[in-house]
Length: 54
Image (tube, rainbow, N blue to C red; front, side):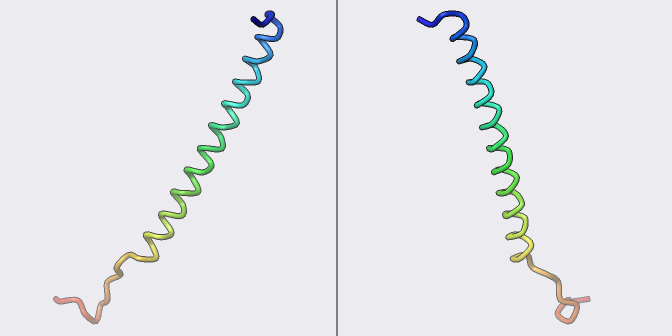
């Protein structure tokens, strides 16, 4: 069993760690989305006016 002050400290640190982890996850997701967008742009088919049919 924890005394109230220790319990409060553990809960506070747990929440602080959870917020930091959530921020890190958001950062990684943003980096993944940006990399995916760059990859899509590099492989997308561009139209060539010389080969288009009227």
